[in-house]
Every structure is written in C-alpha cells, then in structure tokens.
Length: 119
Image (cartoon, rainbow, N blue to C red; front, side, top):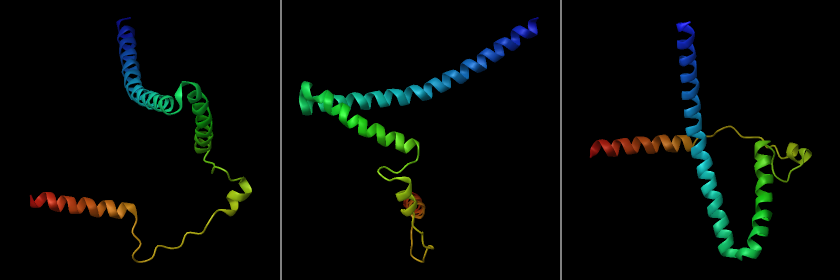
C-alpha cells in the first residue's frame, strides 16, 4: 500500500510541475496582451473622447478580428479562392548575387565575432 502512496505522490508532483510551467508560460502572454489592449483603449479614449472611443474601438477591432481569423485560417485578405489561384507566381532560380536575410545575419555575426576578438 505504501507503493501506491509513493506513486500517487510522484504522479501528482509531476502533474503539478507541468501545470506550473504551462501556467508560467501562458500567464506571461496573457498579461502582455492585456497590457497592450489597455494601452490601445487608453489611446483611443484620449484621441476620440469617452463618447466616440467605444464605437471606434469596436469598428477597428472587428477589422482586426477578421484579419486574425484569416491569418489563423491561412487565407489572404480580400481574395477569393479563384483570385488566389491566379495570384500564384513562379519563383525564379536563385542567381549569383542574390542575398537572403539568413546570409546577411550570418555575415553580421561573423563580423561581430571578429570585432569582439580584436577588442
């Protein structure tokens, strides 16, 4: 019977630890998003006044909500499925001299390391 108590303690401790880490990660995002939302609301109330601000917030948040839902569904805003099929373009083969962001960041890191080594 002692073994069941130890197993229960071990399982509940692991479960609690996992929930604590998960809550720590989620609470940071929720807090940041709430602070951003509060800042936006304060700016709208200062810009439009207390009578017009709620209507402006509602109007702007509806368009943002539509953008967010389209982003989650991976749909282009304002394009129907037929137009989206025609919007696909052919990407040419990389030519000599084409530089992407990854290459630029790698070169920047190498230059930074060289400069740090010289100091």
